[in-house]
Image (cartoon, rainbow, N blue to C red; front, side):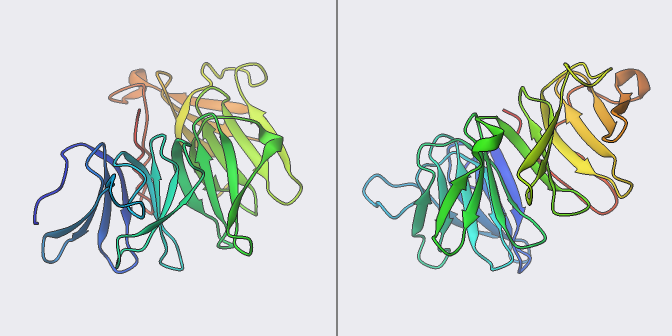
Length: 242
C-alpha cells in the first residue's frame, strides 16, 4: 500500500536507516521509505493480541539499539517488532506523551498525569519516579550533564537531577514574569538557558540560575502565542498538540 493509513498525524520519528515512522490519530503506525515512497502499516487488531495496543499514536522513538517504541493515547507503550508486527506492552492504559533516550542510552517515558518512568533494562520493566508525582509531561530533553528538563501541562518547567533524585519546578508561583504553567516543548541551550514553548504565552527563554525570563510573543513577530515546536539549525522537533 503506497498511501498513508490516516490523514491526521500524531507523531513523527526518524529511523536509524533513514526511513520515517509516522504515528496517526486513529489509523495506526506507518513506516515510510522516502526513496521508494512506499509505506508499511502496523495497526491494532482485536483478534491479534500481539498487535499494537491501539491505533492512536502520539509518541515514537527508534532508540540507539534500533528498538521501536510506540506510545499511544490511553493504550500504554508498545515495543514493536517491525519484522513480525508483534508488540510487547508496557504501562498499560497510560497516555504516553513522550519517549526519550538520554546520552547514557537510558529510556524515559513521560505520561499524561501519570508522571515520569525510567526503563529498567535488566528487569525489563518501567520504574515510576514517585518523587516528581503524577505530573503531565509533554516533552523531555537532556541538560548539560545527566539532568533532564521536562515541559509539563500545568506544573511549569521542571529540572530533574537523575543522579540525586532532586528537582526544581519553575512555575507561576516562584518565577517572576512567568504567566503560564502549560508548556509543550523545550530546548536546552549551550549556555544553560532553556527555551520553552508555551500555550498562549509565547516562547520563553529561562535562565535557571537567576530565574530571569525573556518572553517573545506575537508583539515580537511570532505568528501565534501557542508554541508547540522548536526548530533551530541543529534540531527539528515536532510535538503533537492535543
